[in-house]
Image: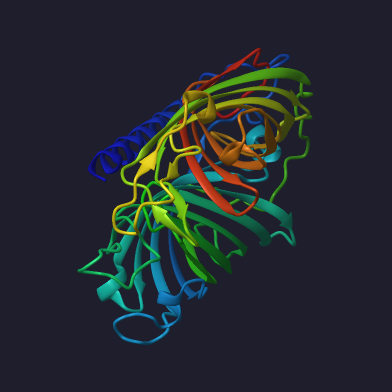
Length: 418
């Protein structure tokens, strides 16, 4: 739908602008929110290593749909894809507080071009995304085992069309979310150059904003090179004395999130599902008291309120398959209040969170059962953030996107990267 595409484009531009403004603040020499005295300027250093990387990623496509298994115009399985990635990132200097706390964290913007088997029905999409990675283990002075996630939007798909592209029941929209996780070895070839190689997992879907939404999943390899523009030659040396990282002030903070989105809904008619016409609004809030255990982890509970315009709609059981009539229940059947357990992994600029909960106040039907939440919080200021989440029901049923803004009250988290 046109309005949905416009909203997604505005969101992507807003996120990119906020992230780039964060880079500008990071390179500023002023330091804020540090407990104790500033006795070692190197430890508090906020100088940046700027990096440019290229990746090649050949992948295997999971055959999760009949279209991918061969029910297409070519009558052949769709098994392979390959992508090329160009990535800018920045990283804090070794032995600074930020580097030590977040294990060499780096973050940036990426652009990818994809090529799939059967371009005629899938298209040749490209992706624009944010990414962040860090060290899991240092194997020796030159070799480390790292992780990286990518999150953004992909464009240029050929979606399902009843007459023009009827076989493609995997991709339902021209713009789809792009989610990727990869684990790799990083080998330092020289002062400027790193070699990377590892495994790569990717998911494309439209977040239930348009039908069909089967999604496309791949697994494969990642091989790349990273050029570090201003990395020092004393990369492997350690200072004679490193002052201890300031002790983390454990505390309870309170995140308040307001979100909204739109979704499509399938309704059972007879023995199968039929797509209800139009898109349905979703709006809600989260109130999260969270105990901050340390620099990288916080956990707590959340009070989750939601209004889902699609909840508990139903079809006239006596209508024919070509003239279904859909009805909306009273408002109380589309409102719910839930409780969930939450855990968050905290890094510079980005926080990744998961949640598991259930609605405790509701009128039944679609609002019964468990729900799961995966969320990304992107810093705008020290205590405000953009919230991008996805809600899943009973571990398998796509529910809705959660696009919103949030603010953190009673925030005592020390920041070394802003």
